[in-house]
Amino acid sequence: MRYGILGDIHSNRRALDAVLQRLHAERVDRVLCVGDIVGYGAEPAECIALVRDLSPTIVAGNHDWAVGDRLSLEFFNQPAAIAIEWTRRRLSREDCQWLASLPVSVVDGQVTLCHGTVHHPEVFDYLQTPYDAFLSFEALATRRAFVGHSHVPITFFEGTPLLYTVEESVTLDGRRTISNVGSVGQPRDEDPRASFGVFDDEASVLTIHRVPYDIDGAAASILAEGLPAILAERLRVGR
Ligand code: ZN
Image (cartoon, rainbow, N blue to C red):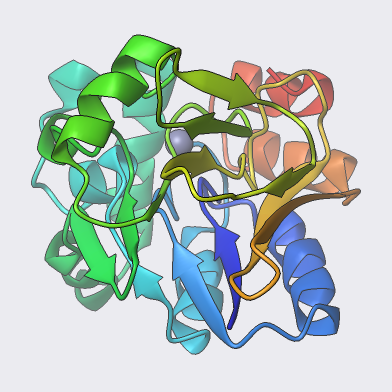
Protein backbone atom coordinates (compact mmCIF):
# COMPACT_ATOMS: atom_id res chain seq x y z
CA MET A 1 0.00 0.00 0.00
CA ARG A 2 1.22 3.48 -0.86
CA TYR A 3 -0.08 6.22 1.41
CA GLY A 4 -0.03 9.91 0.54
CA ILE A 5 0.21 11.93 3.75
CA LEU A 6 -0.54 15.61 3.97
CA GLY A 7 -1.58 18.22 6.49
CA ASP A 8 -1.32 21.79 7.74
CA ILE A 9 -2.73 23.02 4.43
CA HIS A 10 -3.99 26.21 6.07
CA SER A 11 -6.26 27.47 3.29
CA ASN A 12 -3.33 27.71 0.85
CA ARG A 13 -4.99 26.51 -2.35
CA ARG A 14 -1.97 27.19 -4.56
CA ALA A 15 0.27 25.03 -2.39
CA LEU A 16 -2.38 22.31 -2.25
CA ASP A 17 -2.80 22.32 -6.05
CA ALA A 18 0.96 21.82 -6.49
CA VAL A 19 0.99 19.00 -3.93
CA LEU A 20 -2.01 17.24 -5.47
CA GLN A 21 -0.37 17.31 -8.89
CA ARG A 22 2.74 15.62 -7.47
CA LEU A 23 0.63 13.23 -5.39
CA HIS A 24 -1.22 12.12 -8.53
CA ALA A 25 2.10 11.27 -10.20
CA GLU A 26 3.07 9.25 -7.11
CA ARG A 27 0.05 6.95 -7.64
CA VAL A 28 -0.87 6.52 -4.00
CA ASP A 29 -3.62 4.10 -2.96
CA ARG A 30 -4.87 6.06 0.01
CA VAL A 31 -4.62 9.58 1.41
CA LEU A 32 -4.10 10.36 5.10
CA CYS A 33 -4.70 13.94 6.30
CA VAL A 34 -3.33 15.07 9.67
CA GLY A 35 -5.50 18.17 9.94
CA ASP A 36 -5.46 21.97 9.76
CA ILE A 37 -7.08 22.30 6.37
CA VAL A 38 -8.06 25.87 7.22
CA GLY A 39 -6.64 28.86 9.13
CA TYR A 40 -4.08 31.54 8.16
CA GLY A 41 -4.72 31.49 4.38
CA ALA A 42 -7.31 33.00 2.04
CA GLU A 43 -8.97 30.03 0.29
CA PRO A 44 -10.59 27.80 2.94
CA ALA A 45 -13.63 26.61 0.96
CA GLU A 46 -11.48 25.65 -2.03
CA CYS A 47 -9.11 23.65 0.20
CA ILE A 48 -11.95 21.85 1.98
CA ALA A 49 -13.47 20.83 -1.39
CA LEU A 50 -10.13 19.58 -2.73
CA VAL A 51 -9.41 17.58 0.43
CA ARG A 52 -12.89 16.05 0.58
CA ASP A 53 -12.50 14.93 -3.06
CA LEU A 54 -9.60 12.73 -1.94
CA SER A 55 -11.85 10.76 0.47
CA PRO A 56 -8.99 10.77 2.97
CA THR A 57 -8.68 9.24 6.40
CA ILE A 58 -8.62 12.50 8.32
CA VAL A 59 -8.33 14.10 11.74
CA ALA A 60 -9.04 17.64 12.93
CA GLY A 61 -6.36 20.23 13.57
CA ASN A 62 -6.73 22.97 16.17
CA HIS A 63 -7.65 25.53 13.49
CA ASP A 64 -10.30 23.18 12.06
CA TRP A 65 -11.89 22.77 15.48
CA ALA A 66 -11.66 26.51 16.22
CA VAL A 67 -13.44 27.36 12.97
CA GLY A 68 -16.00 24.65 13.81
CA ASP A 69 -16.47 26.31 17.23
CA ARG A 70 -15.13 23.35 19.21
CA LEU A 71 -11.99 25.13 20.48
CA SER A 72 -11.72 28.57 22.09
CA LEU A 73 -9.87 31.39 20.34
CA GLU A 74 -7.98 32.04 23.61
CA PHE A 75 -5.57 29.28 22.51
CA PHE A 76 -4.44 31.27 19.45
CA ASN A 77 -2.20 34.27 18.87
CA GLN A 78 -3.79 37.38 17.44
CA PRO A 79 -3.09 36.92 13.69
CA ALA A 80 -4.28 33.30 13.92
CA ALA A 81 -7.46 34.29 15.78
CA ILE A 82 -8.22 37.03 13.23
CA ALA A 83 -7.86 34.49 10.41
CA ILE A 84 -10.09 31.97 12.23
CA GLU A 85 -12.87 34.55 12.67
CA TRP A 86 -12.51 35.57 9.01
CA THR A 87 -12.69 31.89 7.98
CA ARG A 88 -15.88 31.33 10.01
CA ARG A 89 -17.54 34.21 8.16
CA ARG A 90 -16.30 33.01 4.79
CA LEU A 91 -17.33 29.32 4.99
CA SER A 92 -20.78 27.81 4.58
CA ARG A 93 -22.50 26.39 7.64
CA GLU A 94 -22.08 22.93 6.12
CA ASP A 95 -18.30 23.37 5.80
CA CYS A 96 -18.05 24.58 9.43
CA GLN A 97 -20.11 21.61 10.60
CA TRP A 98 -17.90 19.24 8.63
CA LEU A 99 -14.76 20.68 10.30
CA ALA A 100 -16.43 20.34 13.71
CA SER A 101 -17.30 16.70 12.96
CA LEU A 102 -13.67 15.61 12.44
CA PRO A 103 -12.16 13.41 15.20
CA VAL A 104 -8.82 14.26 16.86
CA SER A 105 -7.45 10.75 16.52
CA VAL A 106 -8.03 7.90 14.06
CA VAL A 107 -6.59 4.39 13.73
CA ASP A 108 -6.44 3.06 10.16
CA GLY A 109 -4.95 -0.46 10.14
CA GLN A 110 -1.42 -0.20 11.52
CA VAL A 111 -1.39 3.61 11.32
CA THR A 112 -2.54 6.17 13.91
CA LEU A 113 -3.28 9.75 12.84
CA CYS A 114 -3.39 12.78 15.17
CA HIS A 115 -2.74 16.46 14.71
CA GLY A 116 -0.90 17.19 17.99
CA THR A 117 0.34 14.38 20.24
CA VAL A 118 -0.74 10.75 20.39
CA HIS A 119 -1.03 10.90 24.21
CA HIS A 120 -3.28 13.99 24.40
CA PRO A 121 -4.59 14.66 20.88
CA GLU A 122 -7.49 16.79 22.18
CA VAL A 123 -5.24 19.50 23.65
CA PHE A 124 -3.18 20.03 20.47
CA ASP A 125 0.28 20.18 22.07
CA TYR A 126 3.35 20.06 19.83
CA LEU A 127 5.23 16.80 19.35
CA GLN A 128 8.72 18.19 18.79
CA THR A 129 11.16 16.69 21.29
CA PRO A 130 12.26 13.11 22.02
CA TYR A 131 10.48 13.44 25.39
CA ASP A 132 7.22 14.41 23.64
CA ALA A 133 7.73 11.38 21.39
CA PHE A 134 8.45 9.13 24.43
CA LEU A 135 5.10 10.09 25.98
CA SER A 136 3.31 9.51 22.68
CA PHE A 137 4.93 6.07 22.14
CA GLU A 138 3.57 5.02 25.55
CA ALA A 139 0.03 5.78 24.30
CA LEU A 140 0.51 4.49 20.74
CA ALA A 141 -1.35 1.27 19.87
CA THR A 142 -0.08 0.87 16.28
CA ARG A 143 3.26 0.44 14.54
CA ARG A 144 3.20 3.81 12.77
CA ALA A 145 1.85 7.24 13.63
CA PHE A 146 1.64 10.43 11.60
CA VAL A 147 1.12 13.81 13.25
CA GLY A 148 1.09 17.46 12.20
CA HIS A 149 0.99 20.81 14.02
CA SER A 150 4.70 21.76 14.19
CA HIS A 151 4.98 22.17 10.39
CA VAL A 152 8.46 20.61 10.54
CA PRO A 153 9.22 17.22 8.90
CA ILE A 154 10.77 14.76 11.37
CA THR A 155 10.57 11.06 12.26
CA PHE A 156 11.07 9.65 15.76
CA PHE A 157 12.11 6.02 16.38
CA GLU A 158 11.04 4.24 19.57
CA GLY A 159 13.93 2.98 21.72
CA THR A 160 16.53 3.92 24.29
CA PRO A 161 17.96 6.29 23.34
CA LEU A 162 14.97 7.62 21.46
CA LEU A 163 16.33 8.80 18.11
CA TYR A 164 15.05 11.01 15.33
CA THR A 165 15.91 11.94 11.74
CA VAL A 166 15.10 14.89 9.49
CA GLU A 167 16.25 13.08 6.31
CA GLU A 168 13.90 13.24 3.31
CA SER A 169 14.04 9.49 2.68
CA VAL A 170 13.55 7.43 5.82
CA THR A 171 13.48 3.65 6.20
CA LEU A 172 10.81 2.85 8.77
CA ASP A 173 12.38 -0.30 10.19
CA GLY A 174 11.23 -2.73 12.90
CA ARG A 175 11.10 0.05 15.48
CA ARG A 176 7.82 1.89 15.93
CA THR A 177 7.81 5.38 14.47
CA ILE A 178 6.04 8.72 14.76
CA SER A 179 6.46 10.98 11.72
CA ASN A 180 5.57 14.51 10.75
CA VAL A 181 5.66 15.07 6.97
CA GLY A 182 5.73 18.87 7.22
CA SER A 183 3.19 21.43 6.09
CA VAL A 184 1.53 21.90 2.71
CA GLY A 185 0.51 25.51 3.20
CA GLN A 186 2.82 27.13 5.76
CA PRO A 187 6.21 25.36 6.11
CA ARG A 188 8.25 26.41 9.17
CA ASP A 189 11.58 24.66 8.63
CA GLU A 190 13.00 27.62 6.68
CA ASP A 191 12.29 25.87 3.36
CA PRO A 192 9.24 27.68 1.91
CA ARG A 193 8.34 24.88 -0.54
CA ALA A 194 5.17 22.88 0.18
CA SER A 195 5.81 19.61 2.02
CA PHE A 196 4.03 16.24 2.04
CA GLY A 197 4.91 12.55 2.41
CA VAL A 198 4.54 9.23 0.64
CA PHE A 199 4.81 6.06 2.72
CA ASP A 200 5.23 2.73 0.93
CA ASP A 201 4.53 0.12 3.58
CA GLU A 202 5.96 -2.76 1.49
CA ALA A 203 9.31 -1.04 0.93
CA SER A 204 8.97 0.49 4.44
CA VAL A 205 10.16 3.83 3.09
CA LEU A 206 8.77 7.25 3.93
CA THR A 207 9.70 9.96 1.43
CA ILE A 208 9.25 13.66 2.17
CA HIS A 209 8.51 15.61 -1.02
CA ARG A 210 9.12 19.36 -1.37
CA VAL A 211 7.20 21.15 -4.08
CA PRO A 212 7.64 24.72 -5.31
CA TYR A 213 4.39 26.66 -5.74
CA ASP A 214 3.11 30.19 -6.45
CA ILE A 215 4.04 31.78 -3.12
CA ASP A 216 3.57 35.32 -4.49
CA GLY A 217 0.00 34.47 -5.48
CA ALA A 218 -0.80 32.95 -2.09
CA ALA A 219 0.69 35.96 -0.29
CA ALA A 220 -1.21 38.41 -2.52
CA SER A 221 -4.52 36.64 -1.86
CA ILE A 222 -3.96 36.90 1.93
CA LEU A 223 -3.30 40.65 1.64
CA ALA A 224 -6.24 41.15 -0.76
CA GLU A 225 -8.60 39.68 1.87
CA GLY A 226 -7.27 42.07 4.52
CA LEU A 227 -5.78 39.27 6.61
CA PRO A 228 -2.70 40.11 8.77
CA ALA A 229 0.37 40.85 6.59
CA ILE A 230 2.58 38.61 8.73
CA LEU A 231 0.62 35.61 7.40
CA ALA A 232 1.71 36.52 3.87
CA GLU A 233 5.30 37.38 4.75
CA ARG A 234 6.02 34.16 6.61
CA LEU A 235 5.21 32.07 3.53
CA ARG A 236 8.25 33.56 1.73
CA VAL A 237 10.69 32.58 4.47
CA GLY A 238 9.12 29.32 5.53
CA ARG A 239 8.84 30.20 9.20
ZN1 ZN B 1 -1.00 24.03 11.51
